[in-house]
Image (cartoon, rainbow, N blue to C red):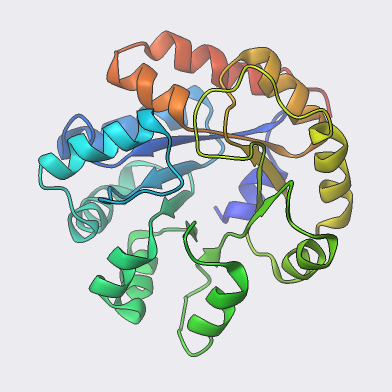
Length: 255
């Protein structure tokens, strides 16, 4: 199923859990994807470990370091997806920094991502405008390049990004790195509502989300949420019931 279609046809609010590829061993990657799909995940954001993860908070950074210490690479992750993608139907969005893509080769990366059935890619250290130039002559095989917008983005820049957005718009809820937020900025809900009204693709809110009431509140203002640090920590600690509870809270949103 295409990424945008999966989000549009969800029950309640969309819920996209983030996991770090190779955290806990590569043999756990496909089973974890299958388990999250069975729990009701709309799509899955799959992180590629990187040595300098500028957008990641301490929990995801630690997961990336565990994966790197186990020798996990972008090529290894793509190979596992190719071998196991017949076991799940949930759309996969890769979250990788630009350096691994360059080292792999930009066109080979998109060729392999397409072969894996990947629906989208997020590259947080590549501004969206520059991605349009960088990938202008690249056959992306309909793999969406997901843009990020923030509370500090100008109205002009936001409008330009929304015009060209694919898959979904990732609305960053915090001024900083990933983590678990207790309080969101006062203007956030109005901002998300405005983005959702203006965007021709779904809008998902991410960074800091970790409680069911946050999922339900944000899910009323936009199309859904992306949850990273909480999911990574809970899976690392074996708290799958907590993951299930959070995913199910998205289905309680009435739209």
